Length: 151
Image (cartoon, rainbow, N blue to C red; front, side):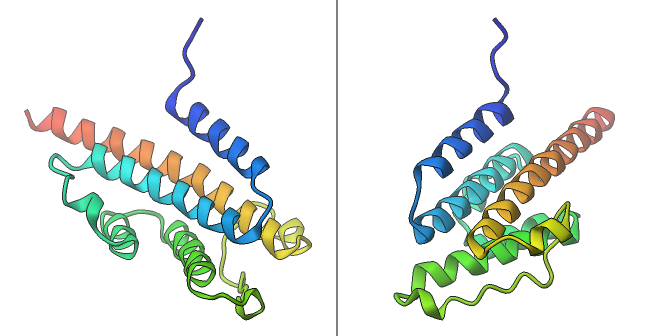
């Protein structure tokens, strides 16, 4: 039997975790952890010596992927997810959380606008993760081709 690839396993685990989590704060922080996990995996695969890079702050990691040419809108979505995570991680009062989805990029904005805030965050994060995975794959393929042509 053919083994599932990394993406299949990753998204199955994500879905299982999201279905188990009922509390909003935990769900947002967990989504952020998945985003950072995927970024770290990319950085480890992209850079020849990633040991210190994966120890950078999340913000610096965003700036690195942005600096190597990542899709700008995708980086904005990642920043938005980070903003939501920071609010949930640093505010005791959930009433003080500000949900601003004005500059996010999602596949179906009309349907997205009709969702409640937690579902918006979940859709934003899952779509962002799917797009990140595709973008990472393209960059790793490009990097491999560059190094093969250089030798």
